[in-house]
Image (cartoon, rainbow, N blue to C red; front, side):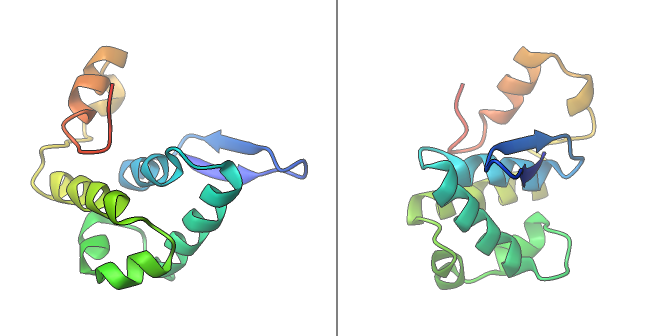
Length: 116
């Protein structure tokens, strides 16, 4: 999912094939205002520079660097769990697009910070 802000400051979501980044976005935006989420998510993306966000690259970032982007300790734990589960194939996205809502839900709640 890609996030864009339109001229009226309305958050718009569009499909993305980068499932890792989409789920990172969902975790970052949880329980905070859209404005705060936009700021934190923007700083999060800047950490990657021109690199494509990936679980392996994410896990290479020191915790202090992630905190400097405004990500809370708890969300860092969730994001690290997400990255680890992508790498060990607990979360396998190859067939995610073929699953129904319940299948996707059952698959993703294996990650800390993603609930039903």
